[in-house]
Amino acid sequence: MKTDTNIRYDRIYVAGGAPRSQLETLSAFLEIGGSLVGPFDDCLLRVTRRSETSFSEEVKAQVRFAPLINTVDEISENEERKLEQGTSKDQNSAVHKEIVHAKRRRLRGPTEELKFARLVWTPKLHKRFPLNFRNCVLAILMLQKRGVGIPSTLSRDTWMYIFSFCCRDWFHVKLSEIQLLRNLLEEETRARKEAEARAAKAERDRAMMCALLFQTQCENNPVRSRLLRAVMGLPDDSDDGE
Image 1 (cartoon, helix red, strand yellow):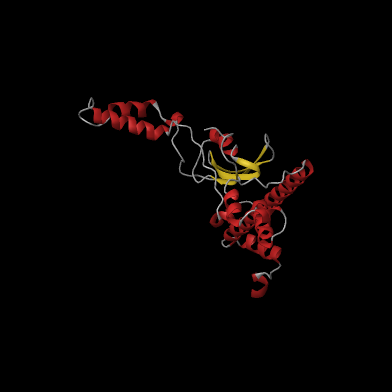
Image 2 (spheres, rainbow, N blue to C red; image 1 turned 90 degrees about the horizontal axis):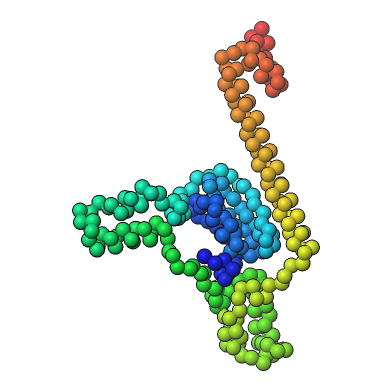
Protein backbone atom coordinates (compact mmCIF):
# COMPACT_ATOMS: atom_id res chain seq x y z
CA MET A 1 0.00 0.00 0.00
CA LYS A 2 1.51 3.30 -1.11
CA THR A 3 0.63 6.01 1.38
CA ASP A 4 2.10 8.89 -0.63
CA THR A 5 -0.48 8.49 -3.42
CA ASN A 6 -3.52 8.19 -1.14
CA ILE A 7 -5.60 10.90 0.45
CA ARG A 8 -5.06 11.96 4.08
CA TYR A 9 -7.51 12.12 6.94
CA ASP A 10 -8.04 14.31 9.98
CA ARG A 11 -9.29 11.41 12.12
CA ILE A 12 -8.66 7.67 11.85
CA TYR A 13 -10.20 5.05 14.16
CA VAL A 14 -8.93 1.47 14.10
CA ALA A 15 -11.79 -0.80 15.21
CA GLY A 16 -9.77 -4.01 15.67
CA GLY A 17 -6.53 -5.12 17.24
CA ALA A 18 -3.61 -4.42 14.90
CA PRO A 19 0.06 -5.36 15.16
CA ARG A 20 2.54 -2.67 16.10
CA SER A 21 4.19 -3.05 12.71
CA GLN A 22 1.11 -1.51 11.02
CA LEU A 23 1.17 1.68 13.13
CA GLU A 24 3.64 3.51 10.89
CA THR A 25 1.65 2.67 7.74
CA LEU A 26 -1.68 3.78 9.19
CA SER A 27 -0.18 6.95 10.69
CA ALA A 28 1.06 7.96 7.23
CA PHE A 29 -2.58 8.52 6.20
CA LEU A 30 -2.95 11.33 8.76
CA GLU A 31 -3.10 14.97 7.79
CA ILE A 32 -0.87 17.33 9.76
CA GLY A 33 -2.68 17.90 13.05
CA GLY A 34 -4.79 14.76 12.56
CA SER A 35 -5.15 11.98 15.13
CA LEU A 36 -5.32 8.19 14.98
CA VAL A 37 -6.88 6.14 17.78
CA GLY A 38 -6.74 2.36 17.92
CA PRO A 39 -5.50 -0.77 19.73
CA PHE A 40 -1.97 -1.86 18.84
CA ASP A 41 -0.50 -4.85 20.68
CA ASP A 42 -3.10 -4.58 23.48
CA CYS A 43 -2.43 -0.84 24.00
CA LEU A 44 -5.00 1.80 23.08
CA LEU A 45 -2.86 4.47 21.40
CA ARG A 46 -3.52 7.98 20.19
CA VAL A 47 -1.09 9.16 17.51
CA THR A 48 -1.01 12.80 16.38
CA ARG A 49 0.86 13.97 13.32
CA ARG A 50 2.93 17.07 14.12
CA SER A 51 4.62 17.55 10.75
CA GLU A 52 5.53 15.58 7.66
CA THR A 53 8.08 13.54 9.59
CA SER A 54 7.22 13.81 13.30
CA PHE A 55 4.46 12.08 15.29
CA SER A 56 3.50 12.09 18.95
CA GLU A 57 2.21 8.95 20.65
CA GLU A 58 0.09 8.63 23.79
CA VAL A 59 -0.95 5.43 25.57
CA LYS A 60 -4.56 5.70 26.74
CA ALA A 61 -5.18 2.30 28.32
CA GLN A 62 -4.43 -1.41 28.24
CA VAL A 63 -7.11 -3.12 26.14
CA ARG A 64 -7.84 -6.39 24.38
CA PHE A 65 -9.50 -6.31 20.94
CA ALA A 66 -10.28 -8.99 18.40
CA PRO A 67 -7.63 -9.04 15.66
CA LEU A 68 -8.26 -6.78 12.70
CA ILE A 69 -6.72 -8.95 9.96
CA ASN A 70 -4.48 -11.97 9.50
CA THR A 71 -1.27 -10.99 7.76
CA VAL A 72 1.26 -13.17 6.00
CA ASP A 73 3.47 -13.23 9.10
CA GLU A 74 0.62 -14.66 11.15
CA ILE A 75 0.26 -17.77 8.93
CA SER A 76 2.28 -20.50 10.57
CA GLU A 77 3.84 -23.50 8.88
CA ASN A 78 1.22 -25.76 10.46
CA GLU A 79 -1.57 -23.70 8.92
CA GLU A 80 0.14 -23.89 5.53
CA ARG A 81 0.43 -27.68 5.88
CA LYS A 82 -3.23 -27.99 6.87
CA LEU A 83 -4.27 -25.94 3.85
CA GLU A 84 -2.18 -28.17 1.58
CA GLN A 85 -3.47 -31.42 3.07
CA GLY A 86 -7.08 -30.34 3.58
CA THR A 87 -9.91 -32.57 4.73
CA SER A 88 -11.26 -33.60 1.35
CA LYS A 89 -10.83 -37.20 0.24
CA ASP A 90 -9.92 -36.17 -3.29
CA GLN A 91 -6.98 -33.88 -2.52
CA ASN A 92 -5.71 -33.87 -6.09
CA SER A 93 -8.92 -32.53 -7.58
CA ALA A 94 -8.98 -29.11 -9.21
CA VAL A 95 -11.85 -28.04 -6.94
CA HIS A 96 -9.85 -28.79 -3.81
CA LYS A 97 -6.81 -26.91 -5.12
CA GLU A 98 -8.98 -23.90 -5.88
CA ILE A 99 -10.36 -23.98 -2.30
CA VAL A 100 -6.82 -24.12 -0.92
CA HIS A 101 -5.76 -21.10 -2.99
CA ALA A 102 -8.92 -19.20 -1.98
CA LYS A 103 -8.23 -19.84 1.72
CA ARG A 104 -4.64 -18.75 1.30
CA ARG A 105 -5.70 -15.52 -0.42
CA ARG A 106 -8.24 -14.87 2.32
CA LEU A 107 -5.59 -15.27 5.03
CA ARG A 108 -2.91 -13.29 3.28
CA GLY A 109 -5.17 -10.53 2.01
CA PRO A 110 -5.21 -8.87 -1.41
CA THR A 111 -1.98 -8.72 -3.37
CA GLU A 112 -3.01 -5.79 -5.55
CA GLU A 113 -2.10 -2.24 -4.63
CA LEU A 114 -4.78 -0.66 -2.46
CA LYS A 115 -5.72 2.95 -3.03
CA PHE A 116 -8.50 4.92 -1.36
CA ALA A 117 -10.75 6.92 -3.63
CA ARG A 118 -10.88 10.68 -3.20
CA LEU A 119 -14.03 12.08 -1.66
CA VAL A 120 -15.86 14.04 -4.36
CA TRP A 121 -17.64 17.20 -3.20
CA THR A 122 -21.40 17.35 -3.58
CA PRO A 123 -23.98 19.47 -1.75
CA LYS A 124 -24.99 16.38 0.26
CA LEU A 125 -21.38 15.77 1.36
CA HIS A 126 -20.67 19.43 2.09
CA LYS A 127 -20.59 18.89 5.89
CA ARG A 128 -17.90 16.20 5.60
CA PHE A 129 -15.35 18.67 4.22
CA PRO A 130 -13.06 20.88 6.34
CA LEU A 131 -14.31 24.19 7.70
CA ASN A 132 -12.08 26.29 5.39
CA PHE A 133 -13.43 24.44 2.36
CA ARG A 134 -17.06 24.95 3.44
CA ASN A 135 -16.55 28.65 4.16
CA CYS A 136 -14.91 29.26 0.77
CA VAL A 137 -17.70 27.43 -1.06
CA LEU A 138 -20.37 29.48 0.73
CA ALA A 139 -18.50 32.74 0.06
CA ILE A 140 -18.15 32.00 -3.67
CA LEU A 141 -21.80 31.02 -4.01
CA MET A 142 -22.96 34.14 -2.13
CA LEU A 143 -20.85 36.42 -4.36
CA GLN A 144 -22.15 34.63 -7.44
CA LYS A 145 -25.73 35.10 -6.31
CA ARG A 146 -25.24 38.82 -5.60
CA GLY A 147 -23.37 39.42 -8.85
CA VAL A 148 -20.18 40.65 -7.19
CA GLY A 149 -16.62 40.05 -8.41
CA ILE A 150 -15.20 37.17 -10.42
CA PRO A 151 -17.63 34.53 -9.01
CA SER A 152 -20.49 36.34 -10.77
CA THR A 153 -18.95 35.64 -14.20
CA LEU A 154 -19.89 31.95 -13.95
CA SER A 155 -23.21 30.28 -13.29
CA ARG A 156 -24.06 28.39 -10.12
CA ASP A 157 -24.04 25.04 -11.95
CA THR A 158 -20.58 25.77 -13.30
CA TRP A 159 -19.25 26.47 -9.82
CA MET A 160 -20.86 23.26 -8.55
CA TYR A 161 -19.03 21.38 -11.30
CA ILE A 162 -15.73 23.09 -10.43
CA PHE A 163 -16.07 22.28 -6.71
CA SER A 164 -16.37 18.57 -7.54
CA PHE A 165 -12.77 18.65 -8.85
CA CYS A 166 -11.36 20.36 -5.73
CA CYS A 167 -9.70 18.10 -3.18
CA ARG A 168 -10.68 18.51 0.46
CA ASP A 169 -7.50 20.47 1.31
CA TRP A 170 -7.81 22.83 -1.68
CA PHE A 171 -8.63 25.82 0.55
CA HIS A 172 -6.40 24.68 3.40
CA VAL A 173 -4.27 27.43 4.93
CA LYS A 174 -0.79 26.15 5.76
CA LEU A 175 0.04 26.85 9.38
CA SER A 176 3.18 28.74 10.23
CA GLU A 177 5.86 27.23 12.43
CA ILE A 178 4.74 29.37 15.37
CA GLN A 179 1.15 28.17 15.00
CA LEU A 180 2.32 24.54 14.81
CA LEU A 181 4.34 25.01 18.00
CA ARG A 182 1.37 26.66 19.69
CA ASN A 183 -0.86 23.73 18.73
CA LEU A 184 1.77 21.31 20.00
CA LEU A 185 1.95 23.17 23.33
CA GLU A 186 -1.83 23.07 23.68
CA GLU A 187 -1.88 19.36 22.93
CA GLU A 188 0.87 18.62 25.45
CA THR A 189 -0.89 20.75 28.10
CA ARG A 190 -4.14 18.90 27.51
CA ALA A 191 -2.40 15.52 27.73
CA ARG A 192 -0.66 16.54 30.98
CA LYS A 193 -3.95 17.64 32.55
CA GLU A 194 -5.62 14.38 31.54
CA ALA A 195 -2.72 12.38 33.02
CA GLU A 196 -2.89 14.35 36.28
CA ALA A 197 -6.66 13.82 36.47
CA ARG A 198 -6.25 10.07 35.94
CA ALA A 199 -3.52 9.91 38.59
CA ALA A 200 -5.68 11.84 41.09
CA LYS A 201 -8.65 9.55 40.44
CA ALA A 202 -6.48 6.46 40.88
CA GLU A 203 -5.18 7.84 44.21
CA ARG A 204 -8.74 8.53 45.42
CA ASP A 205 -9.85 5.03 44.44
CA ARG A 206 -6.85 3.54 46.23
CA ALA A 207 -7.59 5.52 49.41
CA MET A 208 -11.25 4.46 49.29
CA MET A 209 -10.35 0.80 48.87
CA CYS A 210 -7.88 1.01 51.77
CA ALA A 211 -10.54 2.64 53.96
CA LEU A 212 -13.10 -0.05 53.08
CA LEU A 213 -10.59 -2.80 53.78
CA PHE A 214 -9.61 -1.25 57.11
CA GLN A 215 -13.28 -0.83 58.03
CA THR A 216 -13.94 -4.50 57.26
CA GLN A 217 -11.01 -5.55 59.41
CA CYS A 218 -12.19 -3.29 62.26
CA GLU A 219 -15.60 -4.93 62.52
CA ASN A 220 -14.13 -7.87 64.47
CA ASN A 221 -11.34 -5.94 66.18
CA PRO A 222 -12.36 -3.49 68.98
CA VAL A 223 -8.94 -1.82 69.11
CA ARG A 224 -8.91 -1.01 65.41
CA SER A 225 -12.55 0.04 65.65
CA ARG A 226 -11.74 2.65 68.34
CA LEU A 227 -8.77 3.86 66.27
CA LEU A 228 -10.94 4.24 63.18
CA ARG A 229 -13.65 6.15 65.08
CA ALA A 230 -10.99 8.42 66.60
CA VAL A 231 -9.53 9.19 63.19
CA MET A 232 -13.00 9.92 61.80
CA GLY A 233 -13.90 12.09 64.82
CA LEU A 234 -16.75 9.85 65.99
CA PRO A 235 -17.56 9.16 69.68
CA ASP A 236 -16.29 5.89 71.11
CA ASP A 237 -18.92 3.19 71.71
CA SER A 238 -17.31 2.30 75.06
CA ASP A 239 -17.93 5.87 76.34
CA ASP A 240 -21.66 5.55 75.55
CA GLY A 241 -21.90 2.30 77.49
CA GLU A 242 -20.28 3.77 80.56
